[in-house]
Length: 422
Image 1 (cartoon, rainbow, N blue to C red):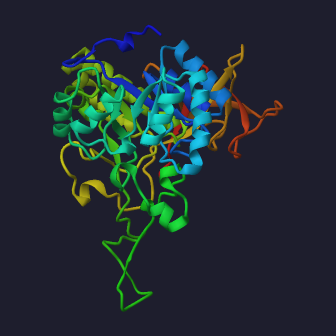
Image 2 (image 1 turned 120 degrees about the vertical axis):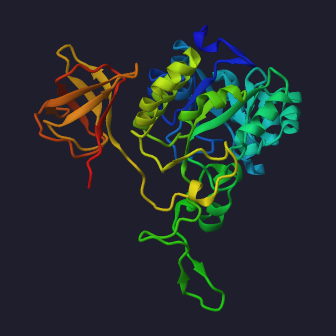
C-alpha cells in the first residue's frame, strides 16, 4: 500500500487524508475512483447507519481488497452504544474483523473498545465522534489505551482544535468532519428518535425527528398549536444546515487536522463522487500553493453545489453559530443536479450500461463526471432496455439501461443532469 497520499503527515507539513463515506459496494468503488485516500463503511451490525445498505462479510472483504489494490485505506464502523444483549454478537463480529483486517475500527463505547482490543489486537482503533471528544485530556486518555486516532466532536472550533493539537502526542492523529449533515444533538448523541418512535439513534436506527416540523402547545390550551417563526411549510427549529468547509482548507490543515471526513453513508453515488472529487481537488491545490487554491475556489464552490444538500454553513468552526447561521428552516433539499447512474460496463461499440436512478430520455443533454475533475457534455442518442429493445425513456428506477452517447464514457464514471427549474 505504498502511496504518495501517505507523505508529509508531520505537524506543520501535513498532507490531510480525504476520508469518504461508502454506504454500499457501489459507492465504495465511486469513492475510490473519485479521489478518496480512505473510506469508512459499516457492517450489517454494530454500525450507526442501520438504514444504509452496508456490507456483509464477503462484500467487506472484497471491498477492502479493492481499496488496498488502489492504495486506499478502509475503516469499519462499530460505534454503537452496546447493551448487554449486543456483547456476544460483538465478540463474533470482532473475531471476523480480525480475519478481514480493515485498516482501523471506529469505536465509541468503552466496552466495545475492550472487546475489539481483545479479539482483534492487530487492528488500529479510532475513537468515534460519538464518544464526545472535546478536550485534550480525553485525547491523552485514549492515546494511553493504545488509540491511534481521535474523531473530534463536531461542536469544536478551530481555536479549540489547535489547542488540542498542541497538547497531545505528535503521533496521535486528529480526524474531523468537514462536510455533510449536522446533528442537532451533541455529537450525534440523540434520544429524540428513541422517545418518539422507539428506534434508537445510538443503535443506528435514527428516524431523524430533528428534521420534522414543530409547533409549541401552551399547557392550558391543548390542541392549539403556536407557530415558532413559521413559514408556509412549517417550523423546523431543530433542522440543521449541512456543513461545508471546502472554502477553508488552509485553516483546517493548519489547525493540525490529519483527516478530513465527509459525512454521508446513506447518500447516493452522485453525492459521493461530487464531494470526493471536489475535496480532492481542494486539498491538492492547497498542497501545491496558496495561489493554486485561491484560483480554484470558484470551481470548488460551483461543484459542491451539484449534489443534494441542506443550505451550507461552517458549523462551529468559527465559533458558536446563531440560529440564522445554523437552522435550515424548511423541509426541502437544494438540488442542482439529478443522479442518472454510474457506468457499469462499456461495450466495444461504445454503448454503456447503467442501472438507472432517475428518469431521462433520448435527446436529453447530460453530463459525464470525469474522475480527473473535468466534465464532458454529451447527448443521449439512443436507449435500449436489457433485452435490446429501443426505448425513448427510462421511467422506472433500477432498470438496466443501455445507452449510446455522443461522447465516450468510461466504466465507473457518474452521469448527471441539471435539475429542471419548477
